[in-house]
Image 1 (cartoon, rainbow, N blue to C red):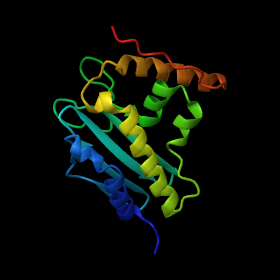
Image 2: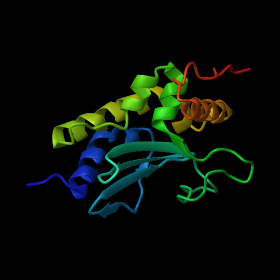
Image 3: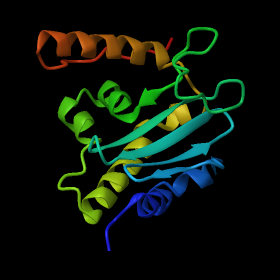
Image 4: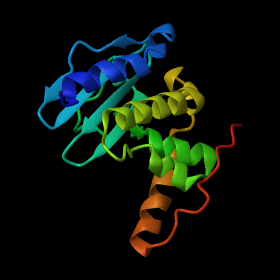
Length: 172
């Protein structure tokens, strides 16, 4: 039997089960098509989505603030105040740790076996638990720093160099 998107949803549900204790409910819709599986959770102020893209060979965890009480659509990047609505977990992890290699590793599930995918899910769930707490709790003061870090990362990629040290969050 081959590991497919329905299996992925089940595995992700297990790895991220701790979100329920934080007040997050599984979103009513899940996506399960041949090469793509996705599951989301909605909290009082924030949302989380875990996606497995078989074609692109990536596993992505994205989180952010709700927009008008709901998870933003895939095309909504910012709210009416210009606040970022989508934070890739790898970007948040780089901001919090300065560890580019670890941040980049979060999307990897080599060699693509069921065990590797489930290990990647567990690794991402633990990382979200460790570094995502402020966002999950509705504290979005870090969002401008994430924006600045993302700009610095993109510039580093254009220049073909390592990302370096991300901007630091210094609460007032």
